[in-house]
Image (cartoon, rainbow, N blue to C red; front, side, top):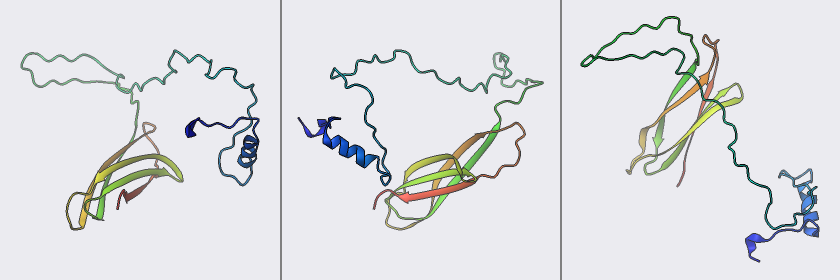
Amino acid sequence: MDENSKAINIDSPLYEGFEEISTSSECCCPTTARPTTARPTTSRPTTVRPTTAAPTQAPCTCCSAEQRPITYDKCELEKTETFNNVTLDCTGRLLDVNVTLRNVCPNKRIAVAVLVYEGSTLLSLKVCRLFSGDGSNCIPTLNAGRFCFVFDDDPCPPARTLTVRIVANYLER
């Protein structure tokens, strides 16, 4: 039996020792309870895998509130259409964060994260990996890019305060 396929029998004293350790109040690890079902009689599971996919959430319908065909005639470059009484749906807020790093070492891979909080609750985060560029001198400023976030909200949302935190670090020496 190879090293990776060894298992502990549930009737083994080793399993009981593991159960005692894993249920200790001092341990921070997940616990493994003693199985409550009978031991399997076959070496492979006998449960049939489901053949239907799990239900998925319906996509947003933000692009079909009002629509009508608009036809351009041959060589017609401009057309004006008027839409009246359009319901304002799928509104929200856009947060566009530009990140510039200062005093960056050359020839380094860098990870940059932008975290958006409301109070102490993390709402969203994005992470990007980039290369500082070749050279032998410190780079005074390095554009790490734009990080865009969208938040759904009411059509006329009340005031809202978000906190943006930037975390950046080198990925190698």
